Amino acid sequence: MQELGTGEAVARAKAIYDYGQTAIFASQADPRLHMVLYVPPTAADGRKLDLLVAVHGTGRTSAIDFRDGFAEFGLYNDCAILCPIFPVGVLGDGARSGYKFLEEGDIRYDQVVLAMVAEMADKYRQDWSKFAMFGFSGGGHFVHRFAILHPERLWAASIGAPGSVTLLDPTRDWWVGIRDLEARFGKAFQPEYLAMVPVHMIVGDADLETWEITHKPGGKYYMDGANDAGKTRPERLAALAGSFREAGVDVTFDRVPGVSHDRMKVLGHVKAFLAKVLEGRRAK
Image (cartoon, rainbow, N blue to C red; front, side, top):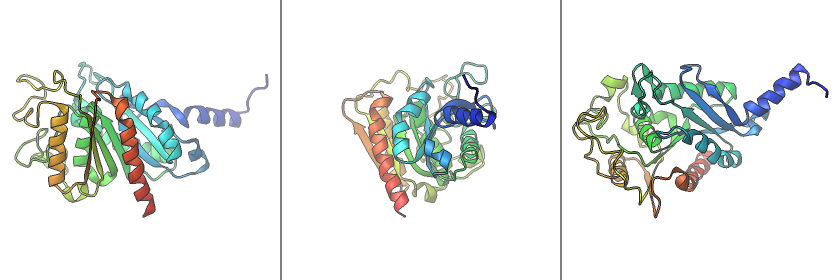
């Protein structure tokens, strides 16, 4: 069997590991955190792509589900898919939920995602100064809080079934409200930029279990008002939609009949929303 020359071997390795459904990469900004992508092979020929960042839930395995679940969408809509992977217990304490609130110990997950996007934009020679973001469950936590803090970086946001929500309430501190946003994150809330982001919110109408989302005194994320947005995920997401709309945000709300807490059963609605926004974005 004839061996491949060095150039051929490099090209083949790139085709296998860097395009299509990629290998898992460590973040250069923080190698404790990882990412996996779908990159349409046409990017190797210089084709320009948009970007969707899809954020996993508490189990983390949905990073692969989203990479693969959005692959066909990405191929036919010239859109790369970047799925961050934030391991459970990254600080050695077994904690599962730190990323949902953007900060954990010395990690600022929002800044790591921005660094991942910049790293991959350089790697694939793309302009991803703006991107879309989707997340479900724990990822829905992350996406709406990222949108509150960094709306100027987004061309769309799709928020799926978060267990708890941060309302745009200037009378309460983070994470229930945003009163201390600038003191905590070094950045003030910019409602004028958030109002420019098309926002999609989605939850199943049968997503009614509360065992994992009810905050109790003594819990790590318990604070006054932690349960005030509602008892169930549909109630809490509706409260978030109302809060965003009061701030001038155009919110598309999908309450999917007969669906419980099932991430894969909402992807069709998410793709339809993103395709519509992409069409309008590219027509400008």
